View 1: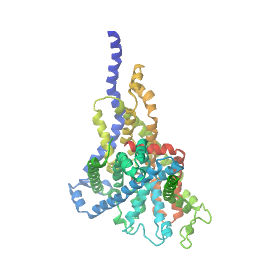
View 2: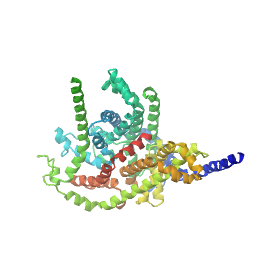
View 3: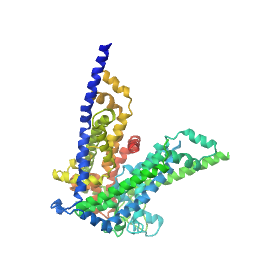
View 4: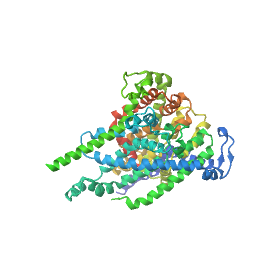
Length: 302
Length: 278
């Protein structure tokens, strides 16, 4: 009896001892990669933000907080941040609201369900550069399809008053399918009998949507909201592709990440670029923390 | 009867809304195609406005195909995707297993580093990553394209979740059969996370294909660009030849769209489960 226990116990302890070795071996490539590719770069970006970079990355000069004092007074930075907010204020609510309605429609047995889903998801697998180019062509004020269909000579992307909306529309169009798919998988977890019970109580359609769907889907909505806010604050591709550098609406559409790109890689001022991207990090962190606190008021967990 | 008609009108209304949105989603792709087959004159004709090309011309395709060396661009993009998927799946499955199933010292701290990295916007890493690559004299190479994707915090998290959801008995049975940890991982556990691996693979592939800023920064030579960066550069050169711009966009988009249409279910589930588990 005693011998038997010993026999079983011996491999168990060696297994447990081995866990330490194997555990570290298994995480080693990932941790090494994360330290080299992400953790070190984070501190390096912070360090870099105290320097003024000379041409070709040479002649780094320590300037202390100068980049930050410049940043605070730089109206272009604040304007770009404001433009980014304007973009997000359209992209996030519209892409979520429209996707929510369409997902509710698609979350039932119906003809053509998977075809609709496949069509809505299509932009997710298209190169953003190609998407931006075709939209730019649709928006073209002289030869574009949009002005032909709606009449008039609207300058969709060169009128500073509306260009930011036009860009955000492309953003909504691009991300809609992704949100729909996430919402559908969230909707499928809501038990069907909730709706049956509500139906008996005379609540169906919009009433059921507000009383059952919205509260039970709120964790998914919260997740999509968090990721979309973070994603939209990093908008770059659309601005870079749609707006030419001499576009009169550039000033009112360039995003903070676009400005970061320009300073870091066009003007070669990586120090200032680093300061800009750290400002973005700060903004994202504040907004995310705020959302985490606010969720307690509206997200419903079972 | 009246309830039935009410239900039917509702059904039709839903379809009408879905069809309107489907058209909105499809029009840019259709317009891309129609423009690509037109002559420049027809594409920029206002009076009359031409919707369908009077003659389906392939001039724009042959011109951009000759100018842009798409074979090379496809090859670069394919290599970028291939190496990113291989690296992501390999490193993430190992780390995911360790974090999900093994007990070792420092595990929680290490995993908190993974989570921390997931919350930081990617642009924060770009300047130092670029300095590293150029320090290694590796700009304008496939390695440079792959570099930021050698490991994946997000994939590690995804696979950790997958390993955690597996039943405990499996491991114990393997252990009693005399498997060591590595054998248990390779033969018993890893095969069971296949669906998460596929999801991570598709997710990695699509985002590698769509990435624009990093390739623009690191590979400035036309011969080493992936499709996305090449399209962006091309736009500057042919800014008013719309059939050619649209033909190039179409050539760049078609392979991924065809793959998507074939493996639709895996694509949608892959991206949705990866996104949903974040």
